[in-house]
Image (cartoon, one colour):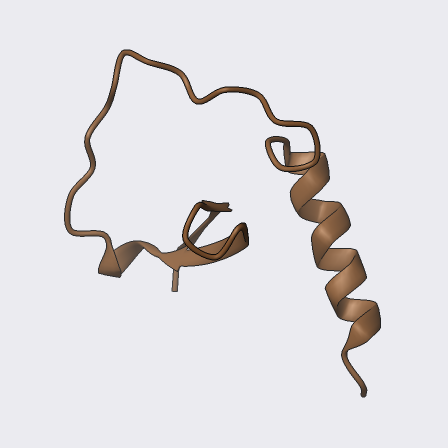
Length: 57
């Protein structure tokens, strides 16, 4: 399954969105404003590392 890792405004966190569930994609001229801690691939990786440490094995 292919997923898109992106910031979710509703959950205020990075989420994985299954591509087969995306029904509509609309490209906008306006860019999303940069927000420290939630806009880069490095931020996504850091969150994944934190969450993996929180999960019991």
